[in-house]
Each structure stands twice: as structure tokens, then as C-alpha cells.
Image 1: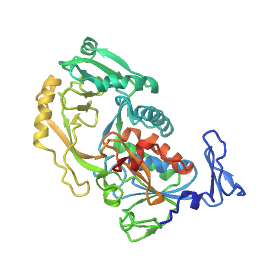
Image 2 (image 1 turned 90 degrees about the vertical axis):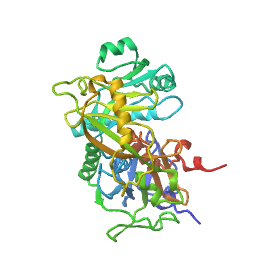
Image 3 (image 1 turned 180 degrees about the horizontal axis):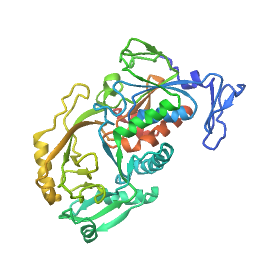
Image 4 (image 1 turned 135 degrees about the horizontal axis):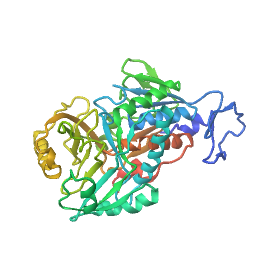
Amino acid sequence: MQKVGFRTKVTDRIRILGMRGRPVKIEQSSLSLAHRVSSSVLIMKSKPHIAVIGAGAFGGWTALHLLECGVRVTLLDAWGPGNSRASSGGETRVMRGAYGPNQPYTEIAARALKLWAKYERRWKRQFLHRTGVLWMASGADDSFERGSIESLRAAKIKFQELSTPQMKKRWPQINFEEIEWAIFEPECGYLDARASCQAVVEAFIAARGKYRQVAVRADGLDSGPVRRLTLSDDSPLKADFYVFACGPWLGKLFPKTIGDLVQPTKQDIFFFGTPAGDDRFTDAHMPVWGDHRGSFRYGIPGSARRGFKIADDTRGPVFDPTNGERVVSSETLRDIREYIAFRFPALKDAPLVETRVCQYEQTPDSNFIIDRHPADENVWIVGGGSGHGFKHGPAIGEMIAELILKDREPDAIWRLARFKKP
């Protein structure tokens, strides 16, 4: 089957410039430019139309970056940005740079930190709360923390190595038993998840992007070149290019290409009430933290909106993000209570004030999927956040816009080909 791709359909309408403003050679050199829209894209009389499906952390930022490059963008979402079924829903997400050794995510996080700051200034709103992130390293296995140091240094993300006595002095409300040292990232912390997703779409609409709250039908998406989309209201949508950033629904939309490569798993989140008048466990006096002792657990300190958040990062059971009942496991709750009594003794009897069930969209290797559909170069598939994608949203959106508009290939780590059996 012949592929009809971005090269053949869109290069007659846009001329792409290189990273430093040098033109990239294209087939139709006789085209005349109508006007300059941005430093990276020169748009001809007819702007290419790109449809982005999914307004979460990856899709919303991709749509906004594409729009800022001057192309025409339609953004779709079935239930709206930051909705309760989405992987990008909920109140908060961790912003961190530590990722262990031999991975690309620390560098991406460094870029994301700059972009979060840029858009906070532009929108005059705060989404990143720089409480710092504390990685507690046990003596049994500190390979994650040890392996993170070189990457943090290379990416120029500030960090400190702290001894146990230093931690006890700084955070006496934490029991540091079995912890021998830690990494502290002072410029990281937590992000307002739902609010920032909504803000991205608001900015997209304000910049004259077209947003529609409507679902896409899966009919024919995975069987050949996509000529148009059929929407849940029976209307068609035709674009030059399609970006599917549909989180845990990617497998249903693309059963042959994705299938179980993106596996939704149920993740239970707990919020505990802190003692009245006691601010030791709020974001004024506590960092975001991660603890690799035994099962990996992490938490976000309480704020004016929610209690003390804690979760076990262990992948939960397979979960249906559309119809699944979002009720937490009593067994997980018992385990979390035992852990709190050990690590945060003053919260031993803290009441459970709120719970939430979200989902990870897990890939087999926990790396993202960013690639063209193997049978259709007009279709990009973006997802597999695997529980750590949210923070990277601004940088991933920027990356995808560049890949599409400069007609580049993604790095091998993101490609679907890595899952092919030898």
C-alpha cells in the first residue's frame, strides 16, 4: 500500500526552516512565501491543518506548540482537559529530574522546567510549586539515586547530596530509619495537573485554535491511510495530519498497531488529613518525596486544597479507563497506613480525607511512544506516559511539533519498532 505522508501532502504548502533558520531542501523550490509566521515555520497561502486528538499533557501542549508555529490546529477531547477519566486528571503531579542512569528523561525534564517557567510568566499563573524533591536512599539498594547524579549534573538541574543527620535536622517530622543518604532537588516539586491542562487549552483557544469536546470513532483508523475522522456526533473531520495523544485509549483506537503495548493499570491515591494547626506536613515545610525502601512509595505534602498525598508506585491491575469503577483497594490502604505510621509517626492516626483512582498508561519498557503509524505517515501516535509523563508535557509538545513540521524521525527509544520481536 502506498504511503501518503506529510512530505507529499504538506510540503507544497509550507517551507520548513532548520534549527538556526537555515532552509531545509524541499522538492518544490519555486514556491513563493506569503508571510513569516514564526522563527521555525514559513506558511504559504494555505496553512496545513493538523488535528490533535486528546487534550491531556501530551496532546494539549502539542496542539499549543503547533498553533504557535503558525499552523491551523483542531484539538479534540472526549471529556475535556484534566477530566477525571484522563491520565492527566487529578490535582497534582511530581516534577522531578532524577531518573536513574542511562535515560533521556532528565534532559527532557530540564527543558520542561524552563518551559513551565516561561508559560507561568506569560499567563501570570503558578502551576509549579518548588517545594523541592527528596529522594531517600536506603542502604540495601541506592542504584537509582547513585545513577541519577551524573544525569542531573549534565542537565544542570540543581541538586544536593544530603546525609541522614542533615535530613533529620531539616525535616524532623520524618523518620529516616533505614535511610543512609538522599538527593534533594530544590528547584523541583509538584505541578497542578488538572488546572494546568485546562490552562493550556484556554491559551490554545485564546490564540484562535479550534477546540471541540467530541470523541473520535475508531472505525478504520488502524487499517490504512486516514482520509478523515468520523466523530461521535457523526460529523467528519478532515486534516492534513493527525496526532493521536489519547493516553490509555490508544490500544482501543489502534488495536493492531498498539493493542496491549499501552496497558492501563489501576493506581490508588490516598490523601490524609494533617493535625489541626500543624503545618509540618504542608508544602510550606515538606518537600515532595520518594522512598525506595522496599516497594517504591512517593508523596506530595498537603496544601490549602488537599491533604497529605501518598501512593505506591507499584503497577496495579489492568483497568478500563472508560467504565472502570474508581474505588481504592482496602488492601492497599492498609499497606499505606502501615507505611505512614513508620515513616511519618505523627500521622499514624491521621484520617483518610480523600481517595482517587487514576491510571498509568504503561508500556512494556516504561518509555514513551512517539512515532508515525507504520501504515500512514500522516498519523502520529503519542502516548505511553507510564506514570511519569505529565511533567514532560511542554517539552514533549515542543518535540512533536518540531518532528512534524521539520519532517524529522523520532529517536529510536520512542519508535514502535522497538517492540518488534526479532
